[in-house]
Image (cartoon, rainbow, N blue to C red; front, side, top):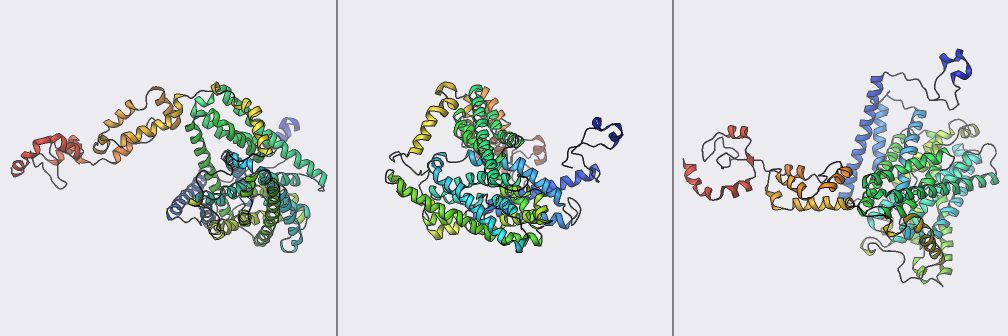
Length: 638
């Protein structure tokens, strides 16, 4: 479709009406049947690869192969899918993948469906206490460090322009800003599995969140400025975009929480969960439509929603929301890495050369951002520790610094931003420059994921950082006995005097609905039934009906159906049927042997008993037959 506005026929006269097409119209040379077949084949391939990746993830967990990230398996599986699509006519024309269609499809799916939920889940799950306690030091690395990284990477790209043809400084700065956005999803997954030091975790996690906001605002400011790039214009654009997006995100979050509070949305668990799930997509598109950054807006919205929405939800609703967001974000991450794998096969030779240089430059730029800012943070911590002794145990050691540098992986945000580079890139540097930079981004994501994501566990062990049983479960950076600093006291004052009265209110402003504990009821009821003697020995479904009549009644049954779509979400009936012994019993009470054609007691044919459908559990039959088994000897002889 053409990006230019198309005039309506009424404004150009009747003569042009016959040739007028809507702005999003296009020509398709496939029949409806062919298009449907190709679409179904693509869905089969993508969903099949997704299931394969999930099975591989299960195998990795079972084998405890912590060094192998699941996202790397997604990249490799995506490459396999790309090879199949390229070499066969399955899913389209053989040996042909249209670049413009691929960019349009990937950028649309990534930007409108994957990134909103990934960003929202990261903000929802952020450990707020640890994050706020280290916010000042995180900002040093994420803001000042990212700015240093952008400058270093941009000038190194410009200095090595003879090897990759990125000759204009504006292009170098635009690409440096987008490639400085880190996404250590594989590293954080390994950190969580190995239970690392909470200081290291929050530094890497928090820096990646704020780093994204800074990198995006720098990129948007450079990419959208027409004409010559000026420092004043860039600063104005960055400040407007950054603080405008932050303010918009916080405002939307406050409105959403106020709606939850006054409508008592938490009393309808299913609707509350789905409203939270849908909110990032609405927020993202609203922000983009009014010229703000959707990613930054969703990030700060999710942080505030994650802090105050649970006060209006039950424990089960909050838990189910966290589960839904996490699993959906995992699927979105997997889609991104699968797209990377599909596109890696199409990397041009120019893109390969550019990618190799960009990888070396990014390693240097990451070091220039992490190590000086960590030393500056330690200097501040040393000065603060005179009044706050707890800071002495929270210095960023050289081991922490190495792991922070090691955690500089790239992901979906950098990929989407590279696809949003304007056409001015090709005009200023020559045709094909934008395509080579996108190819370089694909390569960078895959190689960094393999090298740095795959070696996280090894590096943690080699450095001797505390992990596993050496770190207590739920360990916090500070204790109640530690003296809080002025920043923390200011934050707590704002929460108690402003945010809590505004967003939470009094304790009696919301009630705990009986539906609130429906998940606990379902689980307890299912465990009670499955542990009963009747469940273990009965092959009939009567115990299932008794479970429903004694367990989930009235409004609770309706609540279970609203949450799970059924009144037996634990599938007790199916488990019971799957465990049936399938023993065939004669009408006289005797049990047919496996290879017997006639009843040993009355002589009845087995086929007649099968037609009557009289079958039950061997345990039931033995109890019901009672003393009748004592006469079985004579019956057998007869």
